[in-house]
Length: 265
Image (cartoon, rainbow, N blue to C red; front, side, top):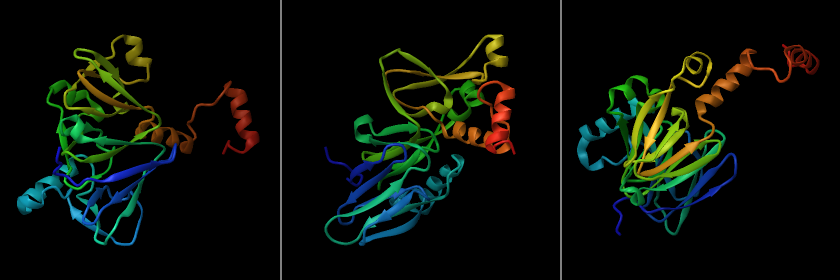
């Protein structure tokens, strides 16, 4: 089947801190989030663009609306386009921002649309549209947390998402439901129904420490999950920096150990 988006080849390197190397033919372009760039061969031109570059034929208003949607997800108005202007083949690489995995997704295999966490998009073939996806249900909007406003990737090209920690892909059958921490969702196909569910139980609510709501995803469709959301990683690092981290072992021995090894500042 003929694609309308640019066709690119790629290779993912690394284990815990991955990068993706993309091979471009002449006049092929890949777009990426600002700050993801790692290296590029001679012959590749880098250009800052307004929005995702998929609205070039829609005039200034179309570009403005496309870029404005990115502000709602907390992203920059601008992205970076890398175009191979020379001859032969040339490579450009992008790095993951924190420990985890890079997930290549062929949008053509999933009906031309994937919904993902708003901070998970890394790069894509030119022509892929990066927009926003609002959850239509009132309860999801009020209590969905990280899942209320998500990104949607539309087109028929390759897109690359980044996830924290280990990545697990689940296939849900029609009517099959999975309950998930909202931060652990990386992406899911458009056929998945997203909703939230109250955890329930007084002890769970007051002392559980896992939040008040689950995300519930109902099939059919595919779901990608991550074991280490960036928000969880950041909170643990912050706890170490402020001296409020949990000690291993008993409080007395843990504090004494910190004093002896120099961590008890």
